[in-house]
Length: 347
Image (cartoon, rainbow, N blue to C red; front, side):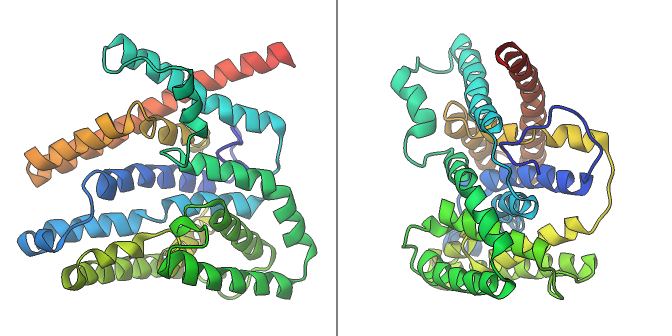
């Protein structure tokens, strides 16, 4: 299994369908940050003044909001094999990329110096921009326990746990946003998704064996339903509709599951896809870097939205997202080579 922590260093043409899913999901992360984070959710005034623009924004968010949960389902589908080397590689990836970005930004005069405390806060300070990385590390640490539980308990016990977990998360983490679930952006929510994926892999049933076209239709239906409900609730009751885009939303979880299952049923074999997938997590690290995210990624997209017409905004933003993705892949290829040299030197 290859998670964000498990970096590919040798090209293997295997399971390219899941590698393609990983790439698409990372692009969707960039898209969702370009949508609701950069532009914000549409308000009643936005809907009243420009319904088509508001609808486009809501649809974009709804169809891309599966991105984070997909990465956890992939990890659970294969089962994380915890290794110290992989863990250290993950930490090295975050700091290597940020050090390179820091020197580029400093040499161009785009930022002030960052002290030791700043570098420590990059990863350790609160949930922050790198919340996913921190939550994933906790999942990574507990993965052996989760694997043992899923593989040694009876099917009915695992089903009971999943029903109980998602009942509690829906009540506390979705409707009331309490209990430490952080709207689904927490290690506990990740563990639930991880075990859900293990269950689907170990005990496939009629709900996971639909034709891939049905899986795709379920994804489209629930994503569209989320968008329509959100737009309607926002129009009639203010900003209430935004809570439907929480990762703990049952609609988002169902949409994610069938988006994921669709890719498990297609066949693709591509060395290029595997090569890109090996570095796609770098796109998250680069664009979410505190040196980049708010002042440049979010700020530039917001400025285009305020000053350009719809066509040019779409073209500029699409090119911007693609550029971030390509640059991140190339930068991470350098990181992989540096890491391999360090491994050969110290091991």
